[in-house]
Image 1: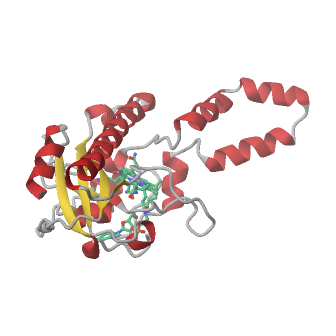
Image 2 (image 1 turned 45 degrees about the horizontal axis):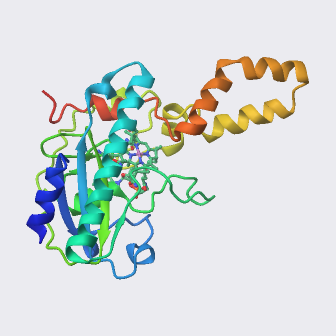
Length: 254
Ligand code: B12
């Protein structure tokens, strides 16, 4: 069964696939998988290599590449989940590639329902680097993940045991806000303010100023590019304006 699933997934042009037992998925800050999917037994984790878009200093180009990849990854995990249900009569659930996620005051929108990095590590698709991202043995850091949860029992893949991070420190040095200065921890607020300048914080600040302004000032505010950018972010969703730790990692690059 596992090899048929692997062939199906790689036939979708997904770059790599790994299998994990749900007991090996260890992500202390994330919800228990059982609370999401009672009876879950395995995770099928899909890895997708990112195109060179992430290198561009033109942020609509960089984020456009990510959006294309997210669309492809969502369609691939959806097809994989359908395959598990149709062919093997298991139950299957797709994991959001990035959002939606629970929004509350304890996590401030920084914890996904399933941690795809911990899932990838459990499925033998890589291990954590100095940047707290998962490095894939062939594709390096430039890889994103999706996953399918299932109640089918699938034999797990072995973990990657050799460390893939070379500790060159390029990710730390290239972070413009020092979010990686402390080993083993990303300073989420610093990263967020810099990488998502049109996220919830800017939105709140803009609209607070707006309600405190007179009609003339309000007219000026909606003509300002800041408003146009917030408007675009509103329908695109989370929109990254920084890929530095992701693109500066030399592992697996030519
Ligand atoms: C919320 C989120 C963010 C938030 C918060 C990040 C965070 N601290 O987790 C912000 C906005 C800051 C963010 C930034 C980025 N993100 Co993000 N993000 C997510 C999301 C949606 C949820 C992550 C989550 O649940 N975190 C909470 C828990 C799991 O984290 P944690 O337990 O606190 O673990 C942290 C540390 O303890 C440490 N850690 C934990 N265990 C271990 C073990 C070892 C050995 C080490 C060294 C470290 C370590 O690493 C974690 C990062 O801080 C995931 C998608 C998903 N569903 O997984 C993508 C995801 C993690 N993001 C991703 C990416 C690529 C990015 C960015 C590069 C942005 C970009 N331009 O693409 C940056 C990288 C920032 C960085 N270097 O840490 C990819 C990572 C791919 C990869 N190769 O690893 C993911 C998996 C999306 C995907 N579908 O592939 N992200």
